[in-house]
Image 1 (cartoon, helix red, strand yellow):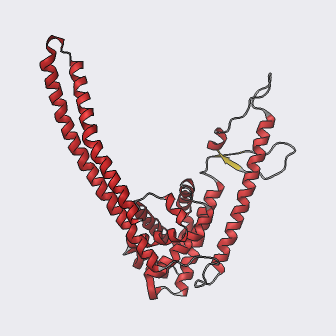
Image 2 (cartoon, rainbow, N blue to C red):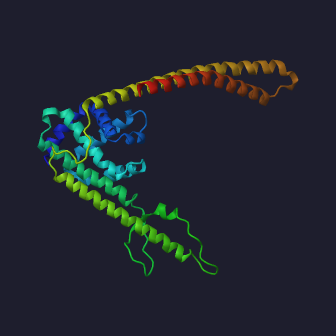
Length: 318
């Protein structure tokens, strides 16, 4: 890997960071539309995190050992948000296609090999992190006597979350058969995950070995016009969300002012009408009732109308 060449290419792309991330996610969602459901409607913050994370990896690409802890954390976070191991090749395909689109003539077979190799290492670390478990706080749970299978570590959270039957009368601890049944299930799950990790490492090796210009077998080809249209639709959706949020804030501020005025009027009316029956608690109750009634009425009706219009607009833009 030519580190200087890879970093120089990223510097070129990073100058258009948000545009690059927008194109990347459009490409990814066109490759696998179901992935869109893993993200919020607005991708503004997500695009910033993506560019920052990619820049951090590139800055340490010549010392990936130093990046391993953060990559493992990133892998676990992705797993918790619903990212499955089989998504990583799609992410790699989208990344390489977007880099090629932005770099143009600078995208050479050698540079493609640099990025392919770097992503393969990153994907391997992140995938292995999500397969192996969560964090370092773990306990060793060996199989019972007479059983066979791998020994493995489980997170403390998982062990604490497992409830066993208590041992039979006059015995301490948990029911031995219940514990062993749990151990066997754990061993089977770990074996299955180890098998999946082996398969993924073989896939990474295959990606490393293939020609950078060779398309992934069975991979969909994403049309640039489709990427452009989806990117524009994403920006339009975010503009609509921003406008709707500003409108909501204006309505809330206006409703708050009306509610404060109504509360003061209700308190004044109560003091004038209560006479000898006046109590501070009674005045406060009238104040709160008037405030809540006015605020909900002033805010509720416009917001319902705005939400209806907003949903109609989203349906129009697809």
